[in-house]
Image 1 (cartoon, helix red, strand yellow):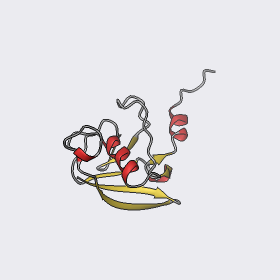
Image 2: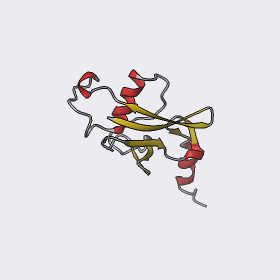
Image 3: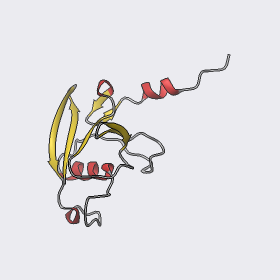
Image 4: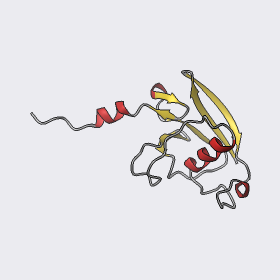
Length: 118
C-alpha cells in the first residue's frame, strides 16, 4: 500500500511516497491494509520508518477532532478515514503546520470559543 505523505519540517513541506510493510508483518493483527485507519498507518510509519513523524491522536473515534488532517484534499479525522492505495495525507492547513501533519490548534479553538457574556 503506497501513501503520499507531506511532512512539514523546518517550516518547509517535504513530500514523500512510502510503502507500508505488508499488513501481516505490522504486528497489528491485520491481514490487509484496506479499511485500517489513516492514524493506524501513521503509527506504523512512525515505528518502522521514522520515529520523528509527528501526528496527533486522542479519542480514536472522530469525536475530539485533534487528528484532523487533509486526506485526499479534504480535511477529515485520521482516526476515522480508511486507508486505500495511493492516499494523500497532508496537514489540515499549511499555514498552521508545526511539525509534519501537526497543526497549531490553539488558534482554531480560540476562534471557536463562545463569546463571553456582557
